[in-house]
Length: 481
Ligand code: NAD
Image 1 (cartoon, rainbow, N blue to C red):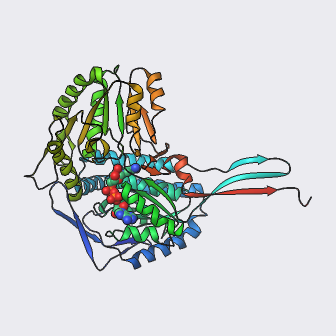
Image 2: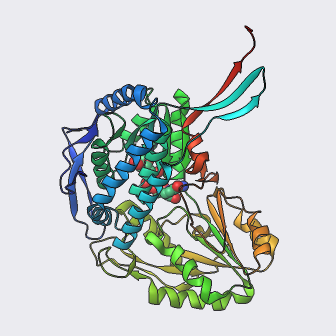
Image 3: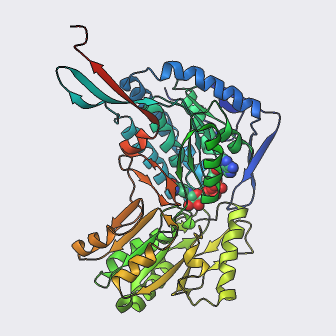
């Protein structure tokens, strides 16, 4: 029988399968109402030390469990999450702000991810096999993994680290963003009912906890998702103990729309993938390059579609696509980007609006009409519901512009001529490139960034490898015969 969570109480951090309370607590706010949510623990350094020492002890046995045993427990964890999914989805909308339907999608994806991870295994590779010797390439777990999670997809991005870390034989300590600690703490509670003590632990804390985790000598790897500036700090901190790390960082994806597209067919997808989750997704259409010959028609259709179909409001309201911006800090950043419209004299196709009368952090979508290539809305990741449309006419020129930034997370090419689109796609420097789509992800497909968008990959067997060391095993068979 699956355990039942109560989303209104957070008795402590999840350490060694127990609730460990802390002397101080804090809370986040519901970004749609500005109201305080529940009190959660604030981990101290000694709480982290305890979690690390339990994780190290648990590693000794967990690292030698079979693939079947790990898969069985990961599936049981997925079942426990599924049994509580209604509460988790509601909680996700309350803490993150995303529309309930999108919270449902996040949980559905997370279950699919965990169950797929449970089927994946890094098999030994035989590099040479003769009468004399066999040489294998084997993979061994690293030890204790620190999983640092951002506030935009706390469930999927958290479990997207936990699954591969566990399946490769590591133990894991999850650190949610202080803006969104709730669902991750509840996932820790469910994990405690399934896994042996010390295998999965979750610590909620303040801004000190991330740096403590990255510099901790008892932690062997950091899997980090977040912003580029923080990613650089994480890398510098890991360097002191030569920890392994994977960094999934920000992006500013180009979508290149060619002159032969069927606007009616591709536009709903492009527009939706510009504003989904209020633009707070690392891989979205963030710079839309539209061919000059269809630019005006595309722009007008995008404005009309967005006006009629991309509703802004609280996550529990029906048909909302753009929920509130997640937190006050991000609200100020996005507001500042909107303020640039007037300051920089950008033309607007759709004006957008910061709702100042509401208690929540609501901002309506804006579409900027062909701003200069060096303007902030083109070169910076806005992480809000605002997107520039840019004209292009020469293929080489648009590829150069798409590749010009220091980010390289995702990119897309839209065309009926698949051969041409694929040829263009192969020239884009990004970790994921799509033809006639954007933001497709799957648990079996590696995902990560080029340039400053990241180091290493998550998901897929390539993602699994990052949670392991390579061990070459030479077996000589004839020395004594
Ligand atoms: P952030 O960098 O502010 O925080 C991410 C996490 O790091 C949080 O848990 C935070 O508490 C922690 N943290 C902060 N300072 C730290 C430090 N010095 N050491 C260790 N940990 C620290 O990012 P955010 O604002 O939560 O997320 C938004 C950013 O994340 C955007 O730039 C977005 O593009 C990016 N993102 C990337 C991906 C991806 O997979 N590539 C996915 C989602 C979001």
